[in-house]
Image 1 (cartoon, rainbow, N blue to C red):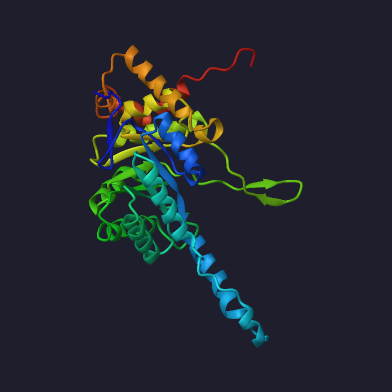
Image 2 (spheres, rainbow, N blue to C red):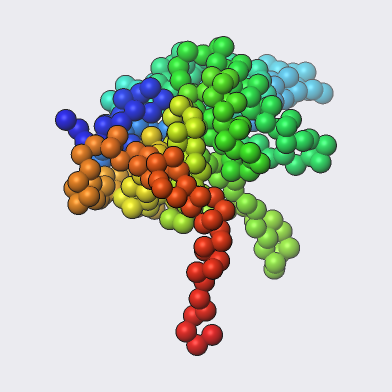
Length: 335
């Protein structure tokens, strides 16, 4: 019996550690190293609808406008029978991963239009994806758009996808919803198979010397996992869909904490980018060692044992915790 076996989105996983969406999935060698190290499943890098739109617009300008004013140039336009757009390249990589790997491969989709979400989701399903992760990277920047309207965008998307695809899908949420448990209940009602908590919105910075915006990726740190820990602890027992945590998983310690509060699966990205796919084996070995010390025999025995529904002081996950943290502060020595 495999003590680390678990289920996520109805998929049977050898363990709860999933390689989250990252550039690692673009390379077959990296993907194989992840599987060899023991990863439970792989989420591909995201397919962005904007990329497809930009490529299509560029191709149309090249094809239709290159000869404007120079009619004779039309005969010199090269033919591109082998041209493949971003969707076709993504599908080809998905099929290569499915051929090379035994672990489940989850396609990640980031759309901007209803038709785009549906068309691309169906294409990824047809290509053999085991599941989908909807990376809904949406910032409500308009003062005219209410929170209710933002939530409805998500709900409409989930309902539409549920009626168009048969494979399970998870919605990757931001932490910026005002009443998350209520919203999760509505998402579940529309047919989502799971949630990934949480999406990281990369924040722009400012270079004060050049007076310009700076866009750079920032890897998560271990403390980032506490946000997902807090909300999964409160959601476990209030929803029946799969719950995955993402962000800040650097070691077996974060993995164990997230399982204790109720995560079905835990995604890791930053540690893999910083230390390579082999970090997976280290994290899993650490989890097995911790389980042995605490006499846990399976993931199901761990999962949710410290969720809000299972502990004697559930208020510890809510306002009581806020008060106790403030009351427990002490000034550093000499200050």
